[in-house]
Amino acid sequence: MKAKANRIYITPRQSLALVHGYGKKKISEQVRAISFITIYLIIFQIIILNIPLSNPISIFIGLSAVVLGLAFFLEGLFLSVMPLAEMAGAELPSKMPLIITLILAFLLGILATLAEPAMVVLQEVANSIPMHQAPLLYYIFNYKSVILIMALGLGVGIAILLGSLLTLRNFSLKTFIISLLLLALTLSIIAYLDERSRPMVALAWDAGGIATGAVTVPLIIAFGLGLNRTTENDSESNGLGIVTLANLGPVNSVLLLSIIMRSFVPHPAADLESFLTNPEAFTFIETLDTMQAEVATTIDGAKEFSFFLDQLKAAITAVGPLVLALALIIMIFIRKRPNFVDEKVLGVIFTIIGMFFLNYGIQTGLTVLGRDVGSNIYSIIAKEEPATSTIHNFDINTLEYILRPNGESTPFFKISISGRVQHIPFEEENYDAQTKTYHLASTTTRLEQELNQPWSKMLLFLGFFILLGFGGVIAEPTLHALANTLSELTAGSFPKAQLIQQVALGVGIGLAIGVIRMMWDVPFLFVLLPLYIFALILTIFSESTYMAVAWDAAGVATGPITVPLVMTVGIGLNQHLPSEEQFGFLTLGATIPILILLTVSLKAKMQQKRLQQAGDAK
Image (cartoon, rainbow, N blue to C red):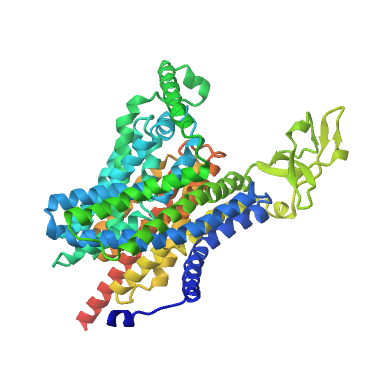
C-alpha cells in the first residue's frame, strides 16, 4: 500500500505534454545539426549556380525523414544499445576469460558496422563506377557488396578487440596507432603498384569514415567505459583514441580485400572499346552475366515488397542482430537480466524506426542533393564555350513539363552552356518547325559576368568546399563531446571553441585539397603518403592525451549527415574531372584536422617547456 501511495500519477494530457516537449527538443537538436549544410547547398545551387533543384519535393521529404530518423535513432541508441554495451563491458572481464571477452568484443564490432546508416551510401556509389576504368571496384560494388561490408565489419571488429586489449592490459595507444598506420601505408603501396587494385586504395581510406559513425562510435565508447570500470590502472588514453583504431581497422581490411580479389578481374583500360579487346574481359563479362541472372532471379521473388517495406526490413536486419547479440551476451555469459527491460524494448523500437526514416531520407534526400550540387558545381570553373543563339536539329520530343498549382503545365528543355546544365522555358514563337531550329535568348546572368575572371571563379569554387567542410562538422555532436573531454582533461587550458574551430577549418581545407587533387589528376597515394608520414612524425613526439584527441578528431568528419553529402558531392564533381579515383575525398577532409591539432599541441608543449626553463633559471 505504501509503494502505491508513493507513486506519482499523471493524466494522459500531462503525459502528452511531457512527450511533446521532450520530442520537440530532440528534433530541434537534429534540425540545428543539418540545417546549415543543407540550406547552404540549396542556396548555393539556386542562387550562385542559378540551377533549380532536380526534385525539390523529394529532397524536402528526404531531409525531413533524416531529421526524424536521427531523433529516433540516437534516442533509441541511448535507451538500448549504449546501456547494454556498457553493462557488457563492465561485467564480461570478471565473468569470462580474456579470450572470450575479446572474441565477443570482436563480434560486436562486426554487428555494429552492419547497423551503420552511412553504409547506405555505398549502394548509391555503384552506378557511378565505369567497368572498364575500375573493374575491381565495379565487381565488388555491383556483385560482391556483401564481401565488402563484411570486410568493413571485420576491420571494426579487430579494432574493438585491440581497444579492449588496450584498456584491460594498459598497452600503449601510441604504439597501436603507429603500427596500424604503418601497416595501412604499406598495404596501400602494395595495392597501388597493381593497376587492378589501385582504385581501391582511396576507397579503403574512406571506408574508415563510412564504417564508424552513429552506431559504432557510441557502442565503442559505452563498451570502453564498461571495461574501464574493471581496471584499477589508469589507462593513458582515458578512453580516447579507441575511435581511431576503429577508423584504421577497416582501412587495412579493405586494402587486404583488394589485394586478394584483384586476381579475379582483368586489367583496366582507357575506354570500353579497348577493354573489350582484352580476352580476359570476355571471360569476366560472361561471369558477370551469369551472376546477374542469379541476382535477377533472387530479386524477382522480392518484387512484391514495396520500397517502404524493403527499408523497414533493412532496418530490422541491421539493428536486430546487434541488440540480440548484446542481450544474449548479458543473459548467457554474464547471467544477468538487463535492467529496465521495457525501456530497452522501447529503445530498440525507436532505433528501428529511426534507421527506417534515416535510410529513406539518405536515399531520397541527402544523396539527391549531394549529386545535384556535385554535378553542377564544376560549371563555375568550366571553360567558356562560344555563345550559341540558335539550336539546330531541335527535337521537340525532348521537352519536359513543370506542373503549376493551378493545373497548368509549362514546357522547358535542358541545355549545356559553358559546362552548366540550364533549364530553359520553351517559347513556341522561337521555334521554327520547318528548319527544326530554336532561337535561344541570352542566358548569361549578371553574376556570371562579374565572376568572369579565372581566379575569382577558382576562389569561389574552392571556397565552396572549405565552407562545406566547415559547416558540415561545426554542429556535429561528436565534435562537441570531444571538445568537452579535452577541455576537462586539460583543466580548461585547451578551450572547447578552439578545438571545434580548428577541426572544422581543417575539414574544409582537406576537402579543398581533395578537389585540387581531382582537378590536377594527382594520384591519391601521392597526396596521402606525405600527409600521413608527417602525421606519424608529429604523433611520435606528441603527448598521449593530445595525440589521442587529434586522431579521434578524424572521426568527426564521419557523421551520418557528412558522409552521404560529402561523398555524393565528390562523386558528382568527379564526373567532370579527369581523375579516375572517385574516392579519397572524405579521407583528406579528415586528415588535415589531425595535422592541425598535433601541430598546435606540440607548439603548446614547446611553449610550456620554455616557460618552465625560464622559471627554473630565475
